Image (cartoon, rainbow, N blue to C red; front, side, top):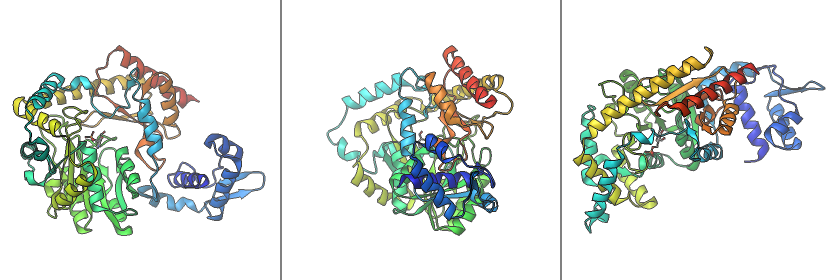
Amino acid sequence: MAKYQNLVDQLKRQIQSGIWNPGDKLPSLRKQSEHSGMSLMTVLHAYQLLESQGWITSQARSGYKVAPRFKKQQQVQMAVSRTENVDVNEFIFEILQAGKNPLMVNFGFAYPSPDLYPRYHINRALSAAARNMPISSAFNNLPPGNEQLRSIIAKRYTTRGIEISPDEIVITAGALEALNLSLQACTKPGDCVVVESPTFYGALQSLQRLGLKALSVRTDPTTGIDIDSLERALQTHDVKACWLMSNHQNPLGFTLSDEKKKQIVELLQRYNVALIEDDVYSELYEGNEPVSSMKMYDQSGNIMLCSSFSKSLVAGLRIGWVVAGKRSFDIQKLQLMSTLATSAPIQMALVHYLTSRNYESHLKQLRKKLHERKSKMADFLSTLLPESVKVVNQKGGYFLWLELPKNIDAMQIYQDMLKANVSIAPGKMFDVTEQYNHCIRLNASFELDQQRAEALTTLSNSIIHHMNE
Ligand SMILES: Cc1ncc(COP(=O)(O)O)c(C=O)c1O
């Protein structure tokens, strides 16, 4: 895409989301050029294009201003925003790379603290699998994947009241492969896909990779996706799929009520739209009541439920699955054409672990620890941060979502923190619009030791500093 077009799209999004209001003066050509790193000519080109399309006006000596007529459109656009081409990869890649520094205090990390994994037992399972690999293992573990593993996964679903046959399950390399294959199975390049706003950045990357258009639908930090906006999106666009999370959503942390899960399934069924249910955090509920899933209400076979062991057992094994419904064969074929199969010894190691150890007791401990650590971190943050910063702490999972005053750019705080060797996940990672640029996601699964307490103090000082600027 031409550089000036990037700036045009960015300014349109900012105007739509209310960052720039009618009558607001835009940065001068020189300032915009310094800020964006684009040449004066490129910025001028972008401003002229916006002016010719009626978004902004220019006046001799007073520069460029947002045109008055865009006020009304704002509300409609904020609830459902369509992005022609998703372009988030480079920025997210940069942030993920920075998080790999071993000296970093990693609140930007997406996985639970590694000290919560049963490392010793997993290592034993891995060596047992390596020692006992039958000669036929490569064939037995081809798509749809290891039969015993699929049957264990299906059995676990029954404890959550979800009836699934092992034949519906396809084993994948982590949930991400499951999600990608599911998306591929129900779309073609150029199609529209509904995502939450904000959403998991992996969804945005997948859409970008497959040349799909994102339709971001307003999502409340407590109650989740706005049903009316979702229906409006379905009425006004030819939507082929929705990628949604119903439990412990990343990054906000909410869990949809059973009533709402059912409503969404019925709505999508009515519009004949496929649902990709990203359910990687469902084992991390709080208390004794397991959470349900939207797949429970599926009558059309049009829901692909994706999950993995990455958040509940160990991240690095890269084993996930999709309960593929009517698309099971399509997904297996796509897998055969891309990665061929999921690693046979790793599937066997998991079977070994799950049949020889008490997974349920590991999960109980994990849930308890996550709850304790998240509460402790939320309490500590509330002693540090001013009242105008909202710390959203939902039941279950391990993310905290910080909402700073709207004029604060969390990217500046992210940059400050990088210099102090602390990573955070700025809100910009989770949306194609600029609506969450004042938000931060924190991973609260780590023990709050002295180093981390100091890192949070530095974070809070940086936030306060930017608020007082
Ligand atoms: C919401 C969500 N979905 C999917 C994934 C990917 O899971 P996996 O590591 O099993 O591929 C993640 C990982 O961060 C996630 O947060």
